[in-house]
Image (cartoon, rainbow, N blue to C red; front, side, top):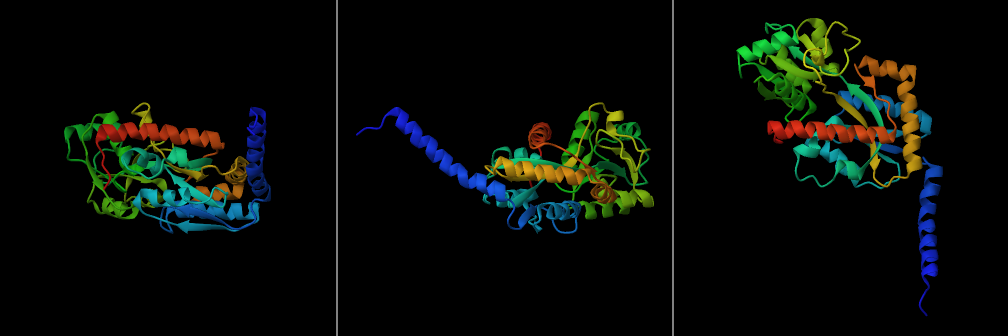
Length: 325
């Protein structure tokens, strides 16, 4: 006997409610086991240090261990794929780095879509980027550097900590907006890049303040300008690039994501606890010690920020013709 439309709708509603029950119960009991946090960078670096600071806070707030799983490689794409393939139960977190927004355009055949397959949870911190020069470079200001580069087209070298990294695209944006030609020199990480800058093998470099600050303070490197929208509190006399080049802003940032379809109640819980940590004086002091500043977002705000970064760097990559190594 055929079922009526009303009866079919009743069955469908009941089935949906039945499927929702385990997810609701899971969210209420969360967390009941340790969490793993997948970080696409090696142990000991800035990303690893920041994630461990926040992991300790989360462990205390959630009552469960938060274990860091370092999965470097492929410009953080390996770590993203790992989380995309994980159950959407709130027990696998992703360290979302700025490079993930760059990769969305840089790589044309990724097996995932960052904004589709990863649900935004919270912002974490901004790693301030700084443009530094070897002391032998005659320019001491952004205006002097632009004049020097225009007088020596292609002869000034500007290093990055890797092709397609935020360091690289920030340099390309500088060249585009300043109308100068400089030669890009890519490295595999900030440490070897800064070693060559200090040794005089390259003229300029763009690094996160975490790595550059010791060299600036020792006098082995000269800070020309900050790349973010504000001056760095630890070096208040160093201007921003946008004080000379209006609208220029480049950030290296990070946040937290989870697999899509993770229950909204779990995402809200994680967001609440992470933001509480970013506001905690002790945690803020630890983050300041590694030259980073908190980025407090709702899940929706962080998702919007990621989309805006994908669009921004997509334009730079296309105009500069950057290709992955």
